[in-house]
Length: 107
Image 1 (spheres, rainbow, N blue to C red):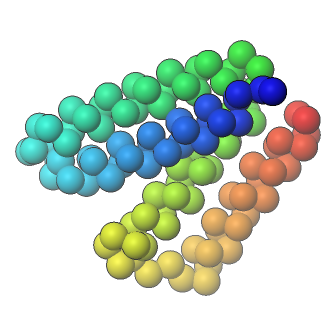
Image 2 (cartoon, helix red, strand yellow; image 1 turned 90 degrees about the horizontal axis):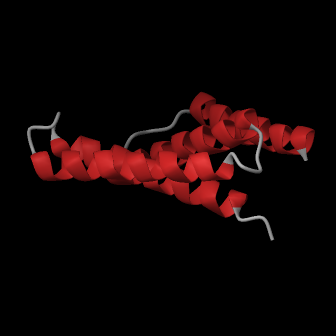
Image 3 (cartoon, rainbow, N blue to C red; image 1 turned 120 degrees about the horizontal axis):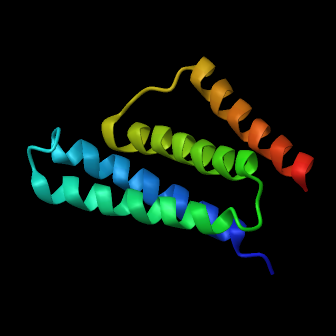
C-alpha cells in the first residue's frame, strides 16, 4: 500500500493546525503558539517531501494545498463564524474537483 495519500492528508492537517496556531499567536506576539505553528509547518513540509517520492509534484502540492485551504475555510467557519457564500462553497467544490482530476491524470 502506498502511504503517500495518508502522508499528504496528514501534511494538510498539520498545515491547518499551523494556520490556527498562527491566528492564536496574534502576529507572533504570543511566542508559544507561533513557534508551535512553525514546527507544524516544518513537519507538514517534511511529509510533503516524503510523498514526492511516489506522487508527482503537481498532484502532491494540489492535494496538500487544496485540502489545507478547504479545511482552513471550514475551520474558520466553525471557530470564527465566518460565513461561506454560495460562491465560496462552489470554489471549495472546484478545488476538490481539480485535485481529483490531477489524481486521475497522474493515476
